[in-house]
Structures are given as C-alpha cells and as structure tokens.
Length: 327
Image (cartoon, rainbow, N blue to C red; front, top):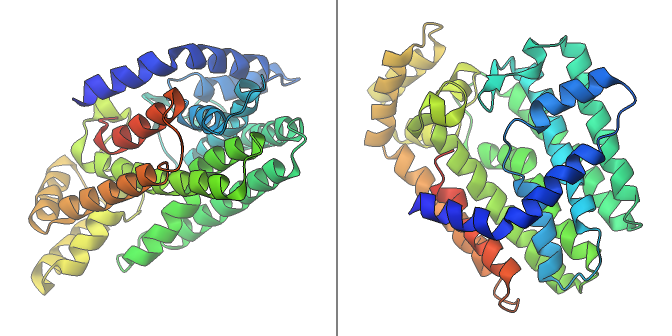
C-alpha cells in the first residue's frame, strides 16, 4: 500500500517536480563555483521536494492563477537545504541521504557559509513575490528553526526531556518550515485569512506528523532505507518521542537500564536492538505512531473547507504518506 501511495503521488506531481528541479538549478546562481559545488552536493542528492510541492499546491488550492508558483517554491527548498547543511555540521553527522555529509567533503566553515548563501538566496527570491507577508513568514521560519536547534543542543545527552519539550523542539525545527510553505502558497493566492489559517493548520499538523514518523524510522528502518545508520539520533544524544514516552512509563529497573545504555559510549548494534525491544514493550513505538496518525488526521481535516481538486487530492495523499513512508 505504501509503495502504491508513493507511486500515486509521484505520478500526480511529476510534471511539477521536473519544473521544480529545473528552477532549483537555474536560480541557485552563486558567483563562486565552490558554493555551487557544496550546495549542489546536498540539493541534488535525492530530496523529495516536499516543501516546494506543498507551496505549489497550497497556492493552486487557493485559486492562484499566476505563473510564478514554481519559481517561488524554490524558496522553501533552499531554506531546507540551508538548515540541513548547518545541522550536519553542528551534529557532526557523517551521512545525509546516503551520501557523505557536505562537511566531510569540504571544510566546515565553507559549508556553513554555503548554508548562509542559501538562506540569503531564499530571501532574495521571496522579495520577488512583492508580498511583505511572505518575507515575514520566511523570517519567522529562520528565527524559529535556529532557536529550535539551540534548544535541542541545550538538551543534548539529557534523559529528562519531557514530551512537551520535545513537541516544542520539533514544531520549531520541522513543522514551522512545512507550515510556512503551505501558508506562503495561500498568501501568494491572496485568499481570505480563514483559508490561509486553514492551510497554516494543515502545514503545522503535517509537519508534526512528518517529524514523528521520521523519528520512528530511526528505530524501524534499515541503514539502506535511511541513507544513514539507524540510531543516529541516540548517538547524537537526542531523545525523541518513542524513548521519551518509554522512559516516562518505565519502572525504576527498566528506566535505570535504558539510561545506562544511553550513556554508554559503546552503543553498538546489539545494544540498540535490545533498546528497541524495550521501546516496543513499553509502547513507546505504538504511542508515537498513534500521535503521528492523529496529527495527520487533523491535517486532512483542515482541508475540509476547500473544494475538491487535484491539489486537494495531492495534499491529502501527502498527509497519508507522511505516516506510512519507509524513508
């Protein structure tokens, strides 16, 4: 079913994907070839282009009749790529999308500055919309995402992170960008605030579902599917919802066992497998799945006020796929 759903989405959006891919290449336009090399290393490494597609179909769902939704959708892919470049440097990640992380191929300062270039490029294109509120959305995204990363860094290695703290982090680090893409499309189409807020709500809940499902993949997917080693979040000292919930529900003995595993620098595949067994037994996996499904359902419910259309179908399929995907 999951493969069928993914295939259906790809079939529906393939004409847009081709145009988005071309627009990302054409509008990158750095003066330095090195910047192009570093940016391209990530930008063209197999990303889903989820955020540009959300912007495009949010705009069309709202009746946008212009010709610039493809161009303006690149804003959100450049923003996304910038944050990934920065995050991989901060986290010391080795792999991204099955390829060596950019900072393992070029000096970290050059990678960080390339991320800065992409942020500036996104703002430059946003200015071409001549919509101050689109620029405001972009500015808010960059503020929230940077603060989310700082917050997560401050909690790195801690085993007392609460569910509420986790939700705040993923809202800032993931949901805000997906939400902004959907809201930006509505602003471009100049719809009433009621419809804009509906798409903003759709993007928020989709973003939360997407990140929770992503956190689950760290325990359920293979290295080949992920493009990196499973358990990366744990090795980086990041507690996500499956573990947070399990720790909260565990008895003293299980809690002590898990905390000891998390603090052990020799956190190998065998120990990771045993930890996964604990998360299943304590229902941390099932709880996270249920929360992700609830957010996906709320996302789809946010679209009820819109007429049936191809774009509504695509957005609905994306909400379903967010919680069923394997990568």
